[in-house]
Length: 445
Image (cartoon, rainbow, N blue to C red; front, top):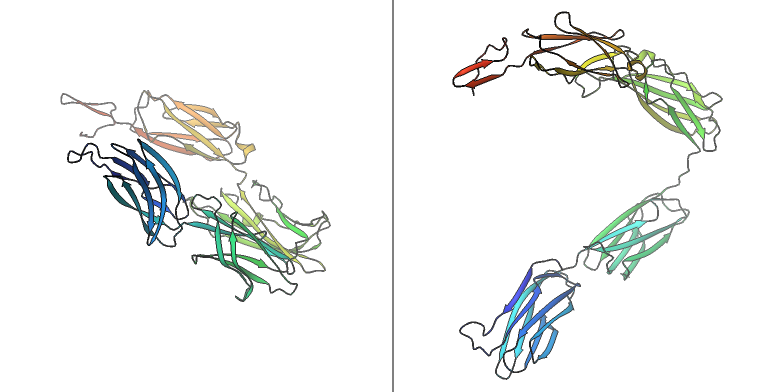
């Protein structure tokens, strides 16, 4: 049992003031335990003279239980297990060790704390929703603090209807294996709503679980919004289709709301949505295809979202089911940008970075990118399959105070990055050295 180990140790006649022929003994027991658990107590006796009677007892209030009783004739060591009595509240018990002989009578007491056993009760139903007339099957599981099955007595288990009326009750239900199985049949006229199962232990601890009784019917068809994961053309069709569970198309009317949102330059939220509503009918394939998102998607803004919410009403029955879908829209244009480019350079050390292209995957791979540097320096780069082109530029001839790099491709816009020389000051014997003529400022360590 976890807890501090308290050593109730009586070393008698071992001190200088004791006679050398008197015995000494050692008793070890836990200082804290749980009611109903099994613990171990150990005793060790060094016999100096004559046989002795040794006894260990556990005292709780007026009750006393003998844990060990032996006649000791030689050096003695023994460990015994004992059952800790169950308690309802924290209780202080006493362990008493007694030694008696012809000329010896010794006794020592120590206290231990016994805590009530803690347990976890779980109530499970075989399903969360029932139809009127079905039997509700449920089980009560009791676990101890180690999550092992635990014996428990439940004084009351009751079932209440949605109006908090008690409609079933089980009294003094004992769990010996850790699991209690119960059931309750419902009538065809059972009130629909949320029902509650409650269980009380003998210590008054309450556990509840709910389930629902409702007259439900499984849907006979489903509504699906067909959209690709990413679209690059504003004219990409948006199809809303209904299909029965056995595969046949659904004939009926469709109401749809299509919205577009544009991500702002802050990259943290979308602008206000622009929406359009449509009313259509499904064709012989069960699909409605008269949705055109061209007017709400911008051809000049990257990172847009397109969402579709719809409902389909089945002809003849009036059954209405809903569907939804969303996708991202990236205009079929190429966007070019510098990435991972330092803001400073050091002459003589290569300036590394990369240029990325954004757009449709088919339009950004293997693209020629022109990179212009200071003076008449030009470089031709080619993007990889991900639209990325890496570069490493020689900076030996970069003597200007700042350098502007330009990059563009045939289909994309022109972009630039501005970098300044890296200034390093070295102090050595009061002499200051600057590695670049543009570094004309004082520095201090």
